[in-house]
Amino acid sequence: MKIISQEELEKSKGNLDAQIDKLYSSTNKESDDERKRTNNYLQWISTKTQYVMDEPSFVCDKEDKLKRGAVVWIEFGFNVGDEFGGRHPAVILRKTPTSVFVVPLSSQEPSVKKDYHVKVEKVYGFKNMVRWTNVLTLQNVSIQRIDTNASIGNVKGKVLNDINEALKKCHIF
Image (cartoon, rainbow, N blue to C red; front, top):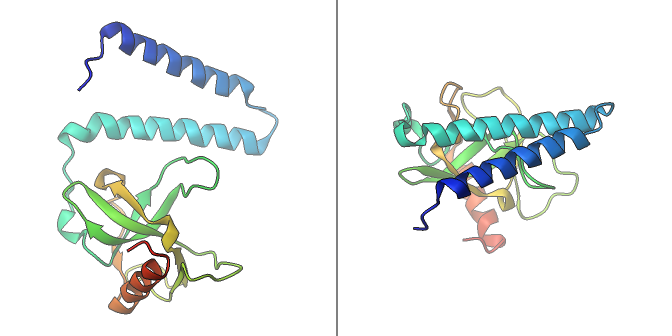
């Protein structure tokens, strides 16, 4: 592990401060979209910083409910370009001691359905509506990103089988 000097740490903080100031000052404050984008990014930096500070003492109070087929709300964060981001429900496919492999769910029906799209007719314990997943958005995320204060739902075995088949068709598993 590389040893970081106090000077390097101070320099990194200075660089971050300068980049945040540059982003803020270059944001067109007259543009709703630019204000929203910059605000979302700044809020995400704050949230992620809190995750990092909480990490050494983090304990998940609902770890026993985080199992294959459970549907949880996850903060995917602020991402670049077309990367998946924001707060969304997601189906847990696998759990490790500190993270979960999930596929996010969306209420938006794909305009063109592909082999990697899976229709989820019902999420038990959630509002009754059709949802969709794109298995190409499979992610491994820290359990710290799970909102354990929100309801935890589940999907039935057929949905998990459909997700597995889509993953196979896409040569992911």
